[in-house]
Amino acid sequence: MTTPAPHISIPYLREEALPSPFCPGCGNGTITNSFLKAVRDLGHEDLSGFAFVSGIGCGAWIPSPHFKADTLHTTHGRAIAFATGLKMARPELKVVVISGDGDLSTIGGNHLIHAARRNIDMTVILSNNYNYGMTGGQVSATTFTGDTTATTPYGNPERPFDIARLVAAAGANYVARWTTAHPNQAARAMKTALQRKGFSFVEMLSQCPTAYGRRAKIGNAQKFLEWFKALPVRKPDDPLTYTVPTHDGIDLGVFVDREEIGFVESMQNMVRNIPE
Ligand code: SF4
Image (cartoon, rainbow, N blue to C red; front, side, top):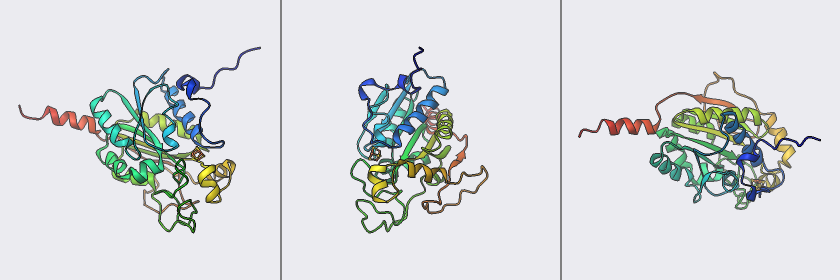
C-alpha cells in the first residue's frame, strides 16, 4: 500500500500550530492553501526570504502562528505600518501582510491607502469576511448596508468600502479580488502579486459562518460558497467605476496590473541623487 503524498501546504506549516484554531467551515484555511500553492508554484521549497506581518483578528492568524517563517504579529490595524518599516530596513526580504478587513481596511484603512499611494514593495492579502470575527462580530468598513451584526442589531446604516477599487484608485501596481470558492484563481492572482514590484493586493472574500453568517442570516459555509460562486467575474477592459458593493453587486477578477516604479527603487534613486 502506498503512503498518500502530504498536503501541499504541510511543508510550510508549523506542526505545533496544528490543528488550526479556525472555526469549522471558516474560509481562512482555503486562503492559507491558495497562498501556499502560489509559493510552491513559484518554486519556493520553504519560506526563507519571506517576512510575514499581520495585525489582530482571525485573518491575522493565517501567517502567525501557522507559517514556518519569520512572522511579526503586531498591534490592531498597524500591520502595514510595521511592514513598511521592515521593508525599508530589509529591502531584500519579500514582505507579505496577511490580515482581515477589520484590521487592514477599518482600523488600519489609512495605512492601506497610503501604502498603495506610495506603491511600496509588498504584497497584502486581505481576508474579507465582512465583520470583526475574532472580537465578537462587530460591524466593519466592508459590512453591507442593512446587515445585522453584533453592533448593528437593527441593520448597518453605513455604506461599505469596495476595497479592491479603493486600493486600485490609490495607486497599487496590482489588485485582484477572488473568493474562497475560487481557490485556483486566487492562487494564480497571489502568484502574480508576489512577482510584481510595488504594492500588490489580493482581496479574498471569505466565509465567517460563526460571527457574520449567523447574525447576518447568510447561513453556513455552504451558503457562503453558493453566494460567492454566483458573483460576476470582470472582463479585463471593464471600467473601474466606483459603486457601493451589495451582496450580489460585487465583482471578481483583476482590477489593475501595471509596472510603475515601486517605493524602494524610488527612494534608492533619490538617495543616489543627493548632492555630496
Ligand atoms: S470567527 Fe469567523 S473568521 Fe474567525 S475563525 Fe471563526 S469562522 Fe473564521
